[in-house]
Length: 282
Length: 257
Image: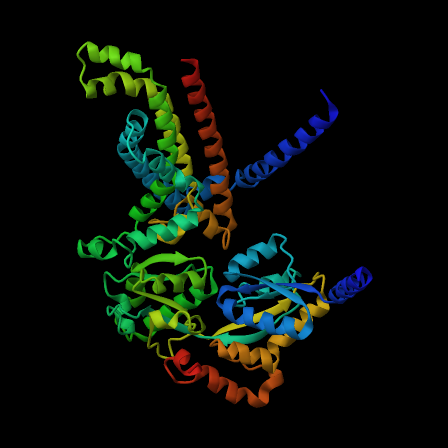
């Protein structure tokens, strides 16, 4: 009996020795999707994957200061490329793209159109400028400014209404969910099933929207390079992409290798639907 | 001195001192003054000084009567109230922030009446003050209560027999005798308010020049431009050291009496 137990324990230990425990740093917007990808990946490979979700810029600071996960997935290249340059990451690849969404509390009628965002007395919450989504948000308002569609100095009035600059996109979404902000700018993928009942999505014309491309890469001194490689492969696989799509993300921007389908990809990303979130999921 | 305890002590002292030294070394560099005078740092210092000052005034105005009542009067449920007032010291600040949002936020318990009155608390400097008051005032309450309890009741009674009314006794006897305690409590409260992070970022948000206090500024600067973060961190080390020296002085003041 005891021998049997010992033998099975030994087997278990040996079995788990070959499976790696993988650490993945990922942008806050990936929280739900990567948690699900992690479960599928672990079930398929026997690895144990743990995640740390935060603003990409916070994760980059940690990487710069000695944090050593195996994989890093950032919400923009600005927080990714310098790590490749400094030799911490082997070069990455885009694995999904995302779009912006302007959201407002469902029961708050103050905000109906983009123009309302510039009206005095409106409380807006956006991400800090170092946060990828905060950077995209500022590009969005300057695109609106340039078009002149909403009058002079839209961005000035918009920024004057900002009451908080949050450290990651999920904190931005939270403030709308709690009804504390009149509107916020997040990714369309942040309008998750958990958030949807409490928010409305304000129409954002495609020409003002920004395409966010997310790169993923492996740390050069990862202790489990093979498992890390397998994780990245899984994210890029049909199964991984299906999970990402389910959570409202779009396919990565066209790559040279997938040139044939680039028209289709571009159509998927640049679609003229004003609210990709609503369309992406039923 | 025995070798093993000495070696272990050196280890701990080094461990505690080394990070502080690193902060000072990195923070107090040639860029210190220009960075200190930059808008990011100046705004953060201004917000922190303004909000902690308001918190101090509210703490003294509201905390002193409570501490005095708790020290001088017995009533039903006093022990329960005493424990309740200590709770924020043990509560994680982020929980305090959620509580404040659910109480004073737009959709909170008092949200609707406050909105009707045209008062919007969340994301304002007032929210920073409320967050600080919630997490820090209990430190003042504790020390002030101990101070009032330490005052010799016979001295007060003597004054009263000489015809002094209640306020005069408090003003000229109780307050001066408990003063060192009150001041120590206030310094501790100020330090705690200055370092507040979790409740503030949740309830007041983070906006430069308005609600972004020193700790929030350090957090946000760490993610883009390291220089202000290092300068502010060095400033905090110096401030913390000064606070402790003051508190120790005050501590010895009320024991030597």
